[in-house]
Image (cartoon, rainbow, N blue to C red; front, side):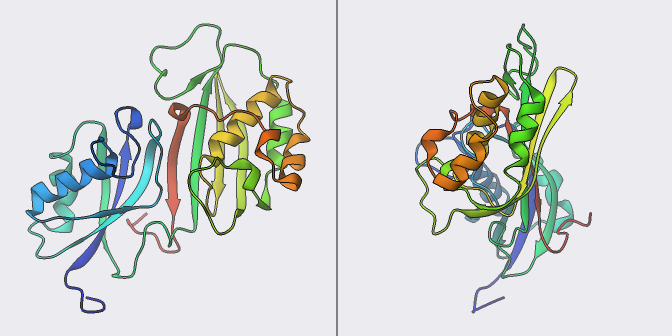
Length: 258
């Protein structure tokens, strides 16, 4: 109980297939992850349970380790039994992986130390029906070494204003990118990004640019040019959402016991 507020706060680690949702954030008249979660929580508790999320993933973007939290008063189900109870009320596209009681001051977005996203590309001439919802099909050749060279230029603390799309104003575009890797796994190419925060569609702008570098349409040096100039027009197109997945959100203290 903080500032006179009754009840307790619970955090959930969730995974979802974003294909059938208009993103995470609740929107009137649209099916969203936040909206469906709140409906399931209200069904179980009999009261409104507004949900906060660590990341506002866009329509079509997936998550393997999204973290959300909600307040509850007189919750009828012990936290230890909340995972099966919620999964029994949620559609198949969403799964609760873990639950834990957290402090009253916890915020899943503002308390996050880092977030990791993965973007997956399928590199074969023929598309793969089984991965079409979770990877971008790129039938042409890609120069992975050039992509890795360009990706290395993004590491560190920079003003990433050139790597965002308009839509969500921010006070500062300075972010620290701890990890920016391009890895091959058979026909798949995985691009992994870990940072202290991301701008609106920042990962998809980076991916679209790295793809243009891999196709030979842009030079790896375009990364440094864009970081210095801060101009979005220097970079490639925004990659489609379905290859993107929020893999992990890290906090100073492990919320769910490892």
